[in-house]
Image (cartoon, rainbow, N blue to C red):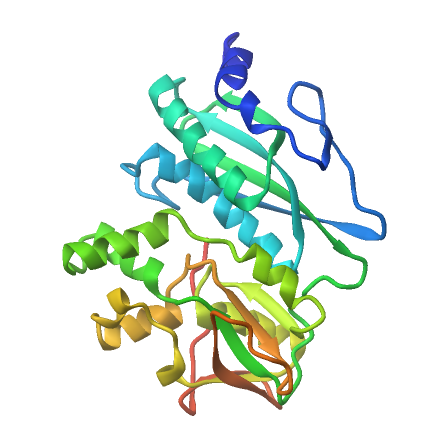
Length: 305
């Protein structure tokens, strides 16, 4: 930005730092993180662009929360324990009311995810762009990956799926449920819950995992391709929230093809216990590709280009 860039950082983001893993945080050229002995660093980065990844009239508190939550979901998918995050923020102007609300939402997400802010950058640009990098750690050789699914494994998913796609339909005025259902679905879109604790518990149990960002079919397609297997889903087994179930067959379509839920989809050996809050929705088989109820399924999902 201009000469007041550092004032904005001190005013709105300085208090989001600290944490056991941060040896040196906000205020220097780079952050220093302590890595637990015998563990490897897990890093991921996500970018949200106003008008592309969230509507322009989204409350800034929700923008701040969502920006970190969607990035943290990648750590959950790898089974990583959270360490810290950094923020690169581009703004057309220094709107201090927006910054105050955004930083409050971000602070809440930092606390909920256990990801204190270790540093970042603030600059002026033609549009609001938020880039968050997250850092985690897991024991060497224990990270969850996409390439371990084997025939005979069960396909499972956390929570409920399709809620965020339904919320987007509400925001775009393509669907008009009752006010209570709409509030639940919009909360799921604006404030997703990264399954960090469950991701850690899946280490050593799940054979493959991914977070549901581009859509259940698309993301399970990545597991199938990386593992060299086929995945068969049962649409009747999909976990739908009561709010989404009211949409009938359209709700089931959103559950299969809609993105932005940030639940975990994973494969589990037949003999392993299904974690609480998860649903068995299909099987891993010999072959390639995806099917739903015995029919080939399109796994293209959301594409950025």
